[in-house]
Length: 204
Image 1 (spheres, rainbow, N blue to C red):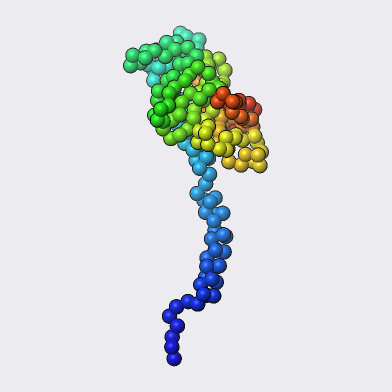
Image 2 (cartoon, rainbow, N blue to C red):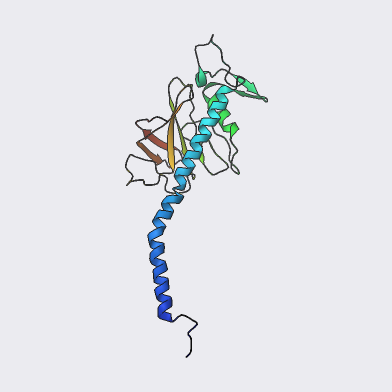
């Protein structure tokens, strides 16, 4: 009696079919487990925002604490000079924050307009920082994979229109508190500037 040591073609096809069924069944769960890379980057950027702003406000050389002045927190836009560089006025926050993050190759800092990209960080995130005296809360935006990469959309409160947004917005108060901005309409203009309109804010 001769013993068969190999698989027949039919057996091989059945085995491949079973493997395919198992893969099809487990892939959605695996994708859910690995998560949305844009959401992961949002969490990272929000953490960077929070930590960097806290460090800025805790630094008396940048935002000196004085009970004699009416302005507080980020609204204290009086001039400070650090390492030979003067920061003041409505670009003070933008320029100091930008100086704290490592830039991407060939990226420059532009603090001339809140609707223009301020800089691209080394991890490929485009940052849009406010140009403001912080008399009230302001908006900060970041595109986690840059303007040149899709989907270039923000959450409108409707996951069907933008299931995986890559642009996120946060409200920043003069005291340095951050709140996610929800229901944001977003588009890029032909000149590369952004047009964002947000309503609502949730606890951060």
